[in-house]
Every structure is written in C-alpha cells, then in structure tokens.
Length: 219
Image (cartoon, rainbow, N blue to C red; front, side, top):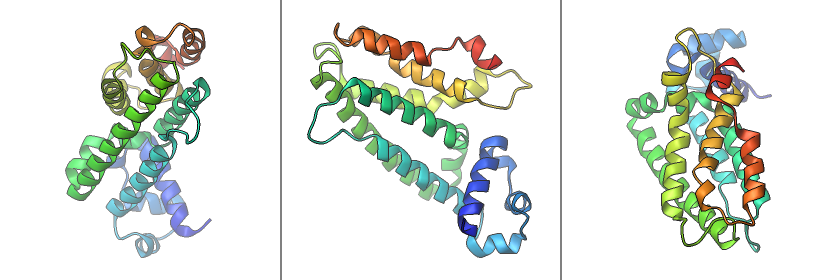
C-alpha cells in the first residue's frame, strides 16, 4: 500500500475510534511509526486528510444511490441500498459524529457538503419514485420528496442521537448494530405506505434490522 493510502487508512481508523478532534497529525504519524515530516510530505495538514476522507465518503454514497438503468427497481435493490447505507455509516462514522464541527471549521468543506447533500436528496427522491413505480410503495400515499428528506435527516442525525441520548456517560464506542438500528428507522417510516404485495418482504427486512435501543447499548 502506498504511504499516502496508509495515512488515509490510519487517519480514518483513528478518527472513527477516538473522534476527529482528539487526533492530531502527530498521533497519526506515531500510529504509523513514521516521522511527522514524512506525513507532511504527503499532506500539508490534518484538514487536507479530512478533505480526502470526505471526498471518499461522498463517492461511496453517490456510488450506491443510483436507480438501475433499463429495469424497474425491486425489493433486492431496496435491500442493497439499506445494506450499503449501513456499511457506509459504519465505515465513516467519525464524519457523521463530528459533521457540524467539520463544516463550521472549513467554509470550503461546508459548501462542498451542501452540494453533496442536495445531490443525495435528488437521488433519494428518484429512488423513492422508483419504488412507487415498482409497486413497492403506494402511489396515492407516498411522497418521494418527503421520504427522501426524512431519510436523509434521519441518517445524518442518527449518530448524534446515539452519542447524546442512547450511549451512557462512560460509553464512547459505537457498534455496527447501533447503526443498523438507524437503517431500521428509515424502513419503519414506510410501513404505512407499502402496497400489500410488498408488505411481507419489507417486514422481513425490518426484522433483520430491528434491535431494541436497550439491546443496542449492550451489543
């Protein structure tokens, strides 16, 4: 692995485990067993590292928020979206935990993230419209714009909710199960909007992602 990629990988690991604000470039260099000067050869500062990680997160999300071409959406697509969201939340959990701080500290990142959010909302709306067209959601009751907006708000605030409301004072670690419960919350908002033919399969998906909040903290 190239040194630049090793730095990004180590930074992502440390940010996820300790929080971005607790990690300095010296911490990253020490974790890798290299001198700070070697790290600065590849990245001028921590903000440049964060910018590359955010770019990777954006590419990851926009890569899976796509409507398939040449065929309608189906329930397997829905399952794939949910699993991709769950994995993305886990892989880049530091970003959602520290998002407000990151964008307030860097105007360029704030503008970039604003445009990214708008593109994701547009993609989410297209996906929900695809689910309506495929007969998964009821066309009379489901509003693609509202569902896309609610889902985006929920996913972007879920980590903050966990850290401020669910985790105990002596708990610092998030788990994949905690983030999967966030995906369940997205699914749950659609229960009253499902068509009868889609209901059994979506209820099975719900069962896969559900975990009681008290179980979340114990997992």
